Image 1 (tube, rainbow, N blue to C red):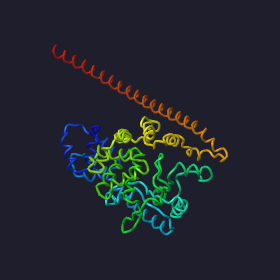
Image 2 (cartoon, rainbow, N blue to C red; image 1 turned 60 degrees about the horizontal axis):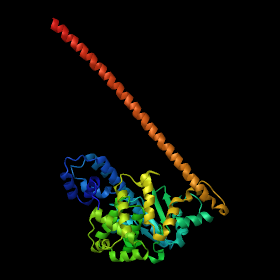
Image 3 (cartoon, rainbow, N blue to C red; image 1 turned 90 degrees about the horizontal axis):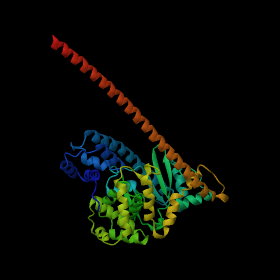
Image 4 (spheres, helix red, strand yellow; image 1 turned 120 degrees about the vertical axis):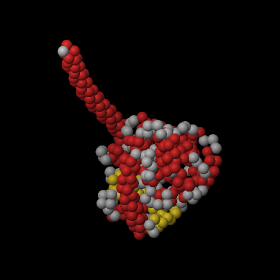
Length: 433
């Protein structure tokens, strides 16, 4: 097990409690803490609500950072109230339209694991609908003021077939209410075929005196594991959600393990518990017992997942960077044994990026597979040229700054020499007198 770097130790201490944060700060008074980096990591991992609650009264934390987090939390709480209200409005309308739905992640996890909806940030509303009702659900959301933002092409013919096979959700946005909805029609990833909509038990929870449907605890918990693993746990908040869910004691871990075995994703559960133990100390006896089982794939995935959590940036913010390619390798490890080739092809041949640029007849749909590699090569060339321009601009700026600095040094040296000459002559005249 790797020793956590100080930046993550401090972040986790601030996340857990005021006492732990104060202890780790007092233990290293002489250490120069890069508070800008800590602030950046808090935002990147979406942990500002939990951290601010524990550090708001700690004087050892710079006031500028505390004020910044306070402002961010206040703004985010307004956004969360809007998302919560919109979730209730949409689910009510779906029930009136007899659309089968299930709210996942987001406000549902906030209510179950955190007991309140305004202490866990989320940017959108995730709703899983019966595939048979997905078009009806889209039409219903459109009537509520939403517009489809993804896909950006018309779903018909071979394009619709490709989209329904290789994608999982339709994104919609309400410009007036500034709320985004992701309408999921399946939850399958990389050969991991999650349960069908009609197979997953539904649980009703209460939010602001309104009943909304979400997944049964064990099924929801397993989906959170799959979602976090697919995204390489790039946000520590997703792992913290798992910890908080376990702390509620609402989840039967043995049942989760049985469910994961039925859909062949025990390696993801092993990875999650391993990372959870490394970052937060896993205390659940059933989860700890599961880690005693020999699972080399799970161990390898845990080691790979650690690097994405530890990174100072998300892998998808730097296209074709080092972490971008490491993530591609990670996905191959993650995929189910007999689906690795399909996972690789599905990840690299994202043909739908061409659909909004080029429209081909269904009869020659195969031509997209020829055009796509050429488009990738062209984009790589553009990225390389852009990177060179950025480096050139930085070099020019550095050279210009160096020249200006040298000029200032020369001026200063001349001024110093002149003062010395005047001073020495003055002293000489005084001695003669």
